[in-house]
Length: 150
Image (tube, rainbow, N blue to C red; front, side, top):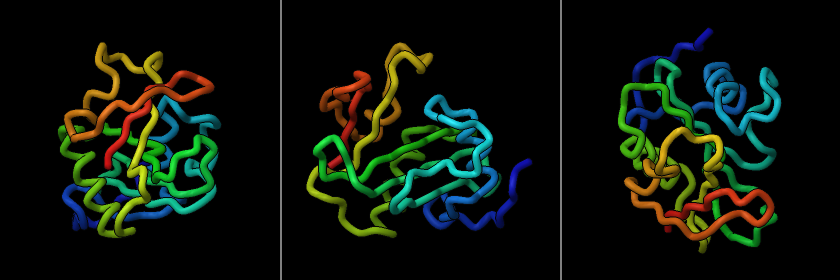
């Protein structure tokens, strides 16, 4: 069941919400990175900016915490778009929201990891690249595609 919110977007399609948002948890349950489906916790420990659409058909989380990859960056830990909106536009709006809420990012900007084996697209990460992100490598342990926005 989606948790409805007033249709008063704060940043384009996005509303700022919280780590316990039920609609966001349900979207996270359908995301390939979800580790424990049904768990009320869908965000990492640390500072999280959770965004959702008014009807609860898209979620974005920017995370800031202790990193083990050596980067000084914020990370998009989940982006799931089941709305009828273009993903690259939603990513740009989520970045606008993140900068408005948190200020300037650390020196390595904002990153995200994409698991190529879990994406149906022949061009994994395409929506991020169309939003201005660039490929900077792969993760050391699982070989995930690493994208960055500075």
